[in-house]
Image (cartoon, rainbow, N blue to C red; front, side):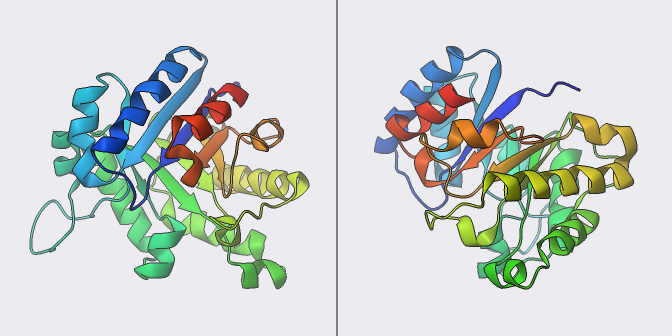
Length: 245
């Protein structure tokens, strides 16, 4: 089935109020590409001012806590993100898995909490360089999907993002054949979990996506868009990826 391309940015721990001016140009480029969905996950401090600056654009959170409220210092609930104006959140990002020790079960709980509050979810999966070198990339991704994807998930609210950990921020990318192979494996695994609904779930590629390589990546079978890190911080680098989509 036809799935609209999605180009999603992730500012990570970058940005300031002054940097929000970039979003005006990015939003203009998004309006000029009506067949492409564009969104950006921002640090929590920037979500509300970004929504005020560019009404109608899809801004999201970079993470969410699974609990509704409570003694979780420094964390944000799904309700808090919604109140700030977020439309979606990222969960299971490889940097959360590596730096904060998050598991696929954590990602499942966060995705479920976000969905309960009407947030879209970009759920990240991907192998380390050691796992790929050991020939375990497919098994790792399949296991992460099985443990992370909530029951009865649909493309109305869930997007999967394949991001090989070794390609994030390194300038390295898998070959197009490698990307296509893992995306096909991910699609097949989704079908075992949610049946025909898997055909409506977009699968993004993430990991050193640039304006130079975006077109080739986005033309690859089963690649429905991109999750973009560093290149989403400026319009000059992000807009060419939108245009490629």
